[in-house]
Length: 162
Length: 363
Length: 100
Image 1: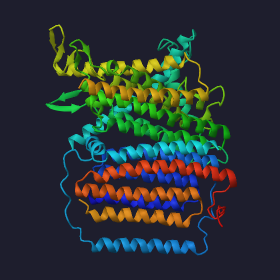
Image 2: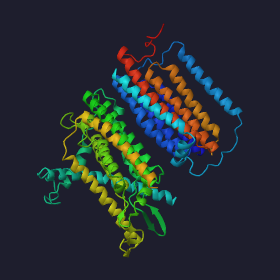
Image 3: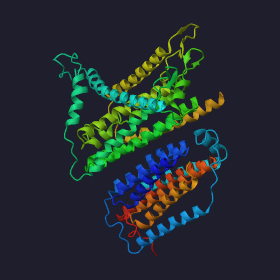
Image 4: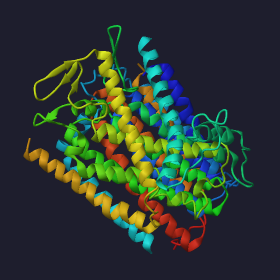
């Protein structure tokens, strides 16, 4: 990934992510979040993570955000122009955010990880590589995640029937 | 640089072919439904009163698009202008770019250079197709919401619920094919179907996975919201459902999306279950009949035969979907969701398990 | 090649935007979306580090984070719908039934 690609993706990412939290209408926030997830998927493609990029679009942008949009439409949420009028918490939040970013930049500057990238093994980021690891080393978390998803489905159905 | 130009040409060619086929399908639908219902159909507009023989081509393929594009383009009162304009674009664009992974031929040899007849060579081809189909749900959802009309919203939510319910059997039925052929790349799957089972029958996906073919056909027709699954758009109930408030070029984008999704389903069925561009017994240098004879052919003719076979198969499956549309009545919504979750989903899971079992036993 | 710190700084900025969203907005759906933004920022840093060290472990963890996020969103939205049925508001300031 070269610098031009990085900045061409990173600057829109940051701006659109800021629009997610700053726009008055919840539908527009959800749509901006979909766009953020899509840009992240493109970013993953440039980082040699092909399967993760496809999964990001299928799972996140294609299913989870549709759920969000459904809920926003069902609850018929309108624009909220009063959204950013907090008493003191708003200013603290913004100052806290700036401090957090400054801390991260400082930490990253101090940690001298000037090491070059390790050369990538063959078939890095493809389905075979992910699948082999998933079914050998990470088999237990894989099965537990299956049970977790089952619990979530049952829970959602029970909650919706109330 | 040459690579870039070749890829660009292939992409433009693919998208232009698909758009042309979409418009032609409109005509096939009109005339085909007329023949099926024992009537004549549109036959009034003609050039010089006679050409082309009252087939209704001028009506459907020339006059209709001109009418649609010159209609007044309005946004309903109180509706969100940006979302109203954005919805058909989001609905159509992912479907158009799905075609770049479908191979329409093996290789084309021009001047000593081998060109793969597939616009994009992704090693996660099937996942890419599923991703783009999931993205097209947004067109329906936003179209229903942005119309400021509670019946459109109802149609939009019904449509989106139907689409996300049927994405699951759509994806699961493809896992059987992926297990059989061992790759997610559509060109590799098409190539792998060139072998012969027992020396006589071409190893097409339909012989390995008949159940997956039926599930995929049903889920694909449901995904494109055609009859018998067209409740979101129910013409006799919700007028046009989620695209009631659209006219002019936006409505044409929604309608074109309908046909393009039918072409996608046809293209995928061809590539995964019916050998794609494979002609039985045809290899790169000519025919190799199983009874021992060969027939050597120049490579250009081989490529033409393969592209022709692909086109015929795709057109056949589009025609099949149009015939199904004009034959079956519409499902009720609870029957539709019942079919998706309680029948197709367990069947596709059973298909995956049975395929895996057979592969392990006969490995 | 972009040094790894660039990817991590971008991930940190996205995470901070998510945190600011959680603290700043009162609509619980927007708060939920900011949590998703935080999860995605973490996914980004995992994928970048996986590539830096040439190991697939980072991408496997992203796989698990995505499935857990999907489960969490399903149950969370069901809970939000139930809460809305009871009180007809999504303003976090007014949802204080569990206080003392």
